Length: 315
Image (tube, rainbow, N blue to C red; front, top):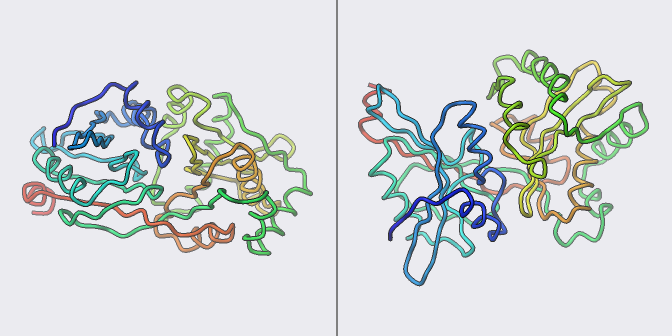
């Protein structure tokens, strides 16, 4: 096995030929995190016999005065890992991980739930899952709704009868309405919040990601933001990455109505999967997502720490 670093053009072309690739595998997501957190990033193509090629996107940075090198694939706990047109074998995954361990003191790979992922046994595996609605082989959107709970269908219908207006916002000025709603949500979640993002990350998404790959969906009541959902689009996959809303409007059921409109649009646009993303261990969030008929798909974390990093960080 050998590997080579590839240009962003070749990186993106490779992904476009992989049905299971998601937005989080693209250079655009890594560009956002380079701007926001200063991560270095690259993509490598590992070459095996019989012309088999496997791509691995990764971000890395140095800690402890440059002595240690940490790596993630991909940032913010989103999908990364090896991806290929064919099924990646256990032996191939092990070879890649063995190579990475020679270079990085800490490795964190969130495996892509859209592609069957081998567990290679050379690192710790933390079990996790995402929740996904399969839109393939559905006759129409009514067949999707049949898998929702009665409560979710009722809430979406209630939202549709109210004053809410739902639409995708394509201008950067929409952050002016969305970010305050996010700050209110953070205050509401308190210590239970598993992530906190500054305003800049949303600005970088608008600045660095082509519009065809993301949409900030908004639900407004008389011009005031009630709820928003930020989704990413790539190949066959739509993923709901971020959402926030104002509690004063919850009685209008904006979260349910937004999901209705977003999923309906995804199906009409020919996407195969609507992915709710992993839920950070929040049972209430899991119940909400399951109410839309979403099914569990494995999205484990592979974690490796060298003895040196364990000494510095835990010793």
